[in-house]
Length: 165
Image 1 (cartoon, rainbow, N blue to C red):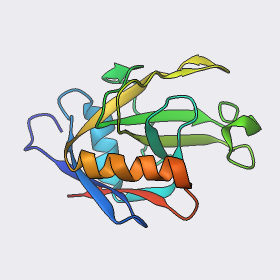
Image 2 (cartoon, helix red, strand yellow):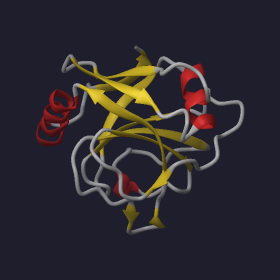
Image 3 (spheres, rainbow, N blue to C red):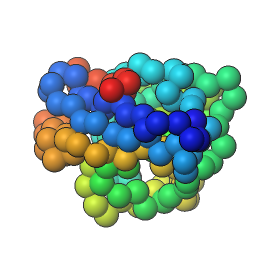
Image 4 (tube, one colour):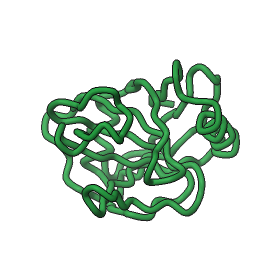
């Protein structure tokens, strides 16, 4: 995707009817951006982070022909960062994560960080670096408010979606 015109994705909490627009960081994470862009639209049940703090995410089956490498890595995402993580079933196997049953196989985690002071440190496995593949450029304030509401009132019935803008 390097050298192409800017590309944008819409990030939405569907039930709450809140959307934001994010710029793909194709110059910093070209393989990840291409994989996500080619697979859009993507989405699923939303979860609110327990460890990373101000994060919402959807867990998806792998969608790229090959899993992207770690690009533009961070363990301290900032507000508006979109991050890509890959986990195996054993990474998410403990019931402490709240998924009901352990996940099987490879799982892709597409995440939005909506506020400051995030640290990708998991007590079970240590540091969990993610690829920053996008940055919200419009609507983060509304989305952050909805994410805080999700934290307080629950995520049941809510979905997180990514689509081309």
